[in-house]
Length: 419
Image 1 (cartoon, helix red, strand yellow):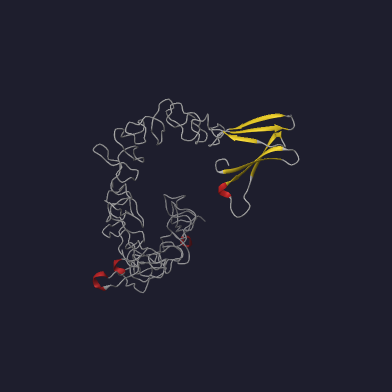
Image 2 (cartoon, one colour):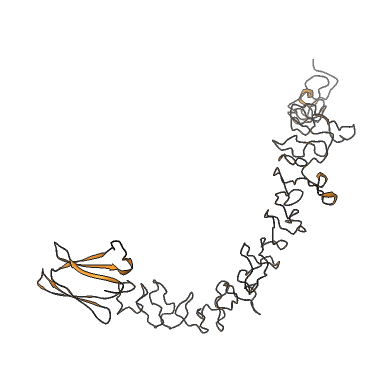
């Protein structure tokens, strides 16, 4: 037996090459246990092999070599960490890839290996970040990185080696330092970014501890000092006095945002459904509720003519004149109404003029608005004697020269035609 293995030395049946066979004691069970074998390529024997283990654990083999007819003596040295430096010469026999320890502090000199000594010529007990260096307060942090080198501390996030009562990694604030743990007795909290008194961490397990069994839940809105919780989980904070992100319906999930925040919005257009909970809490169209709660393309009718204010493409019954009850339609999108609504009373259309060419987009103003005007002089093409010359539009005497003297080729004798 050798360590936790059974070892059997045999030879190959045909070549008589020496073979090392081992079996782990931990792998033996009711089935056939796996043997691991290794053949010595240049030692052949068919005789008994004498094996001894000395006080250092070295295996000494005495072998009669049948090929060379002499005695071979093999020493197999133990190497626990398998770094090819046997234990007798390895200063750190249980740490692979480390074998020298010049200062004797149990940290290896090889800076490419694990747990290497940051101060190989100075024996030191530091064990965090920099290993094997001087550590005045013996807290594991070397004096060169310990920001509180004269007091034992366990902090490591904001400062290394300072007092951390709740053991969350953040150092406790003191008289000269204010960037540390704002909740020094609660390991589930450390920061309060928006300074509202509620810690930034939030979750189902936050934030009571044995030191603070009644600690409030964390801040679901860590960057908003006006909010910290959201009962219905709709993304709007429960503090409805906040005009920017407060939930106007904190007990009911909702996605509305146009008229009020966080209330039921059946069609998803941003305007909340009307609600009738008595006179005091009634929320209707006059307060901004959705005039069409099941139509996502419309939500408000400012002028009350029955056409929705949203005139974008695809909208239902769009009102192209949302502030005029007397008009709504504009089929050619030129800004002139096609017709009056039934609410027209002769005076409530002030400022609007019906389209002279309701089926054609146009920019004319004279003598009828909303008709094609190619030269942009304001006169509709069909009434413009010079439809492609914007400085002329009338030719009273029909001589081919426009009446506007200041225009292109103005007629200086408007009463006389050229024969």
